[in-house]
Image 1 (cartoon, rainbow, N blue to C red):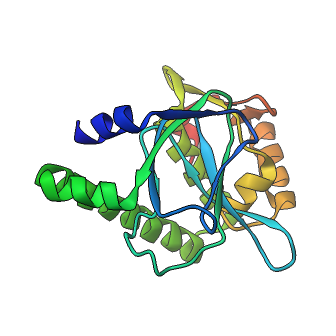
Image 2: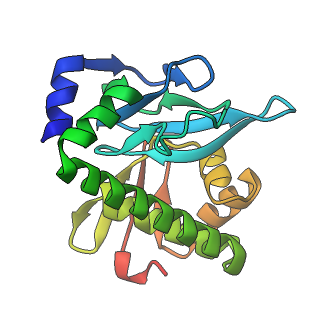
Length: 205
């Protein structure tokens, strides 16, 4: 509740697909709250290639989550969908708010703990699972978060490119293309640039 009040005070910023919301290296330390839409956290490597690191979804916090401003980063956030709405506030304001409201500090600690748990799970998947299993895991997690269920059929509004998916699960775009084609041949899903339709969620494993 206190976080929503702070967002009301600071106001919401809107963005459209493709808009760069912030550059870590150029902004003062801030915390961001995504009210609506989806964004990606990405960076440019030494060879000039864009690397997608994480997908941020409605209700997520992002930005200087470590509360450590000595860590420098060249990451940036970019809107993946239209009608993105975020609020941002200075890290110092967020810290002051947590001091006044211990409940918020506890909620924040739980949120960060879940983020680390997710990172640990992603690392385990990368080490112990092949690309097919990693893609299925990613699509199932995406379905649970944003899928439109009709019985066991799931519809996903697709705002990711095959390159985005490849970078998220650490494989090549060609591998993603082949896997999606294989899934379609097996009747597990249909895929296009607008949507992904999983025919039977219980069979998707």
